Length: 291
Image 1 (cartoon, one colour):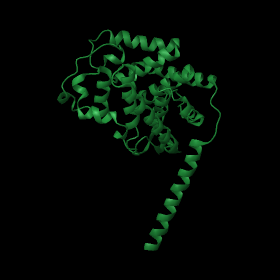
Image 2 (cartoon, rainbow, N blue to C red):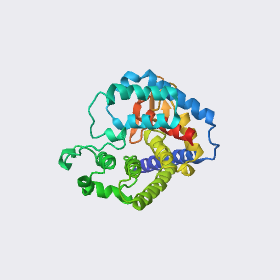
Image 3 (cartoon, helix red, strand yellow):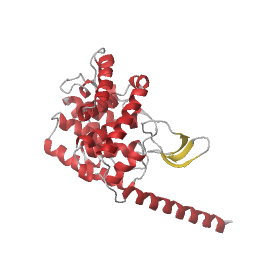
Image 4 (cartoon, rainbow, N blue to C red):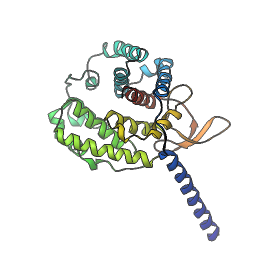
């Protein structure tokens, strides 16, 4: 019995290594960069997804996603994308009083930042975003902010793949608002983009985190760190409806369910495009076209 168990374990490990080796090769093989026409076609399809799901996405209460749509709109200057963002701005931003997230949309607006105790229900990176958007002096001294200004704040973890991209996003927001020491921010930004490139090299799962990593390299101007194969794989992962989801598929069953990996855990479910992954994909493609 022990011998059979040992054989089974050995074969399982061998099979996993073979699958990973193949996936690693597919994720890093030499390819030509997609033509602008391919990127534009993919972007148009994703904008159509936004339009088809406008009612659903307009009810989404995540300001960061609408900031991404705003940035994509300004980068691409595509009329249909501009119209989608302008409609959201008119219906929601202009009709509601400013709040702590308003600087996403109005760069020089200075919000009133509450005491740190009132932010305790937020995640560390969300508090970091608030600081980056406000450059609030009281918040600056908090340990939760100071530790995120250091390169070693995150450690790569299979279950927490967005830590470094969130950290870099906060650093980039600080840079854009002249908040903090420029040399320090440049140094941290440069080191984080190098780490993100390594994560993209070794983590083959094309999902939400994969798109976010590639997006942050592009947003930071590090186009030279982006392998053409990564863009090709993101284009290939686009769903037929024009959006993206967070499933890296391995098997598709007759009932339409997919067995695969998300950015965190294995999943067995139907594929469904979501606003989070799609907004990031739209911003990424807009930056590529602009470049």
